[in-house]
Length: 195
Image (cartoon, rainbow, N blue to C red; front, side):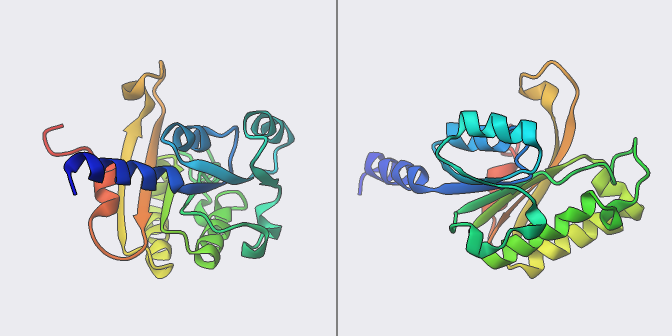
C-alpha cells in the first residue's frame, strides 16, 4: 500500500473515532476533538448554563446531568472519554482537601465510568495543584487509578495556554492514557524531542 493510501486509511480511521465528555463545561475538549474530526456522542454536565451552551453547539449529542447517577448503560461506547473534574479541592487558592474533597473527589466517578465503558483512550485535565496535593500522594492515586483500569500506556505534562494562542497564563496538567502498553499516549501528548 502506498504512503498516500496509508495516510487516507489513517484519516478515515480518525474520522470514525467517537468521544464522550464528562464534566463537559462549555465543551472545550469537545470542540478540540470535533475540530480533529472526532464525533462528540455524549456529554455529562450538571450546570444549567453550560448545558444550554452544549445543547446549542452539539444538538446531536446526548446530554446527561449528575455524573453520580450516570452508569455505562446510559452511555454508548466511545473511543475516547475526556474529563476535567472540578479543581476546587486541589487548587492552590482552595482549602486543599484533595481527592477527599467533595468536588475533586468526583474524579472517582470518572474512573468508575472509565472502568465500566472501557474506551481505548482517555484525556484528563486539571490544575497543576493536583500534582502537589497532599505531597504528591493524590497525583500518585490518580495515576494508579488509571493503571488499575487497564491504561498501562500513559503520559502527563503541564501546558500553559499562553503558548497556544490564548492571551492569558492558564497552566493545566494533562494526562492521556491508552488501553494496554506501549508509547502511544506519549506520542499524542508530548512534543517530539527538539520540537
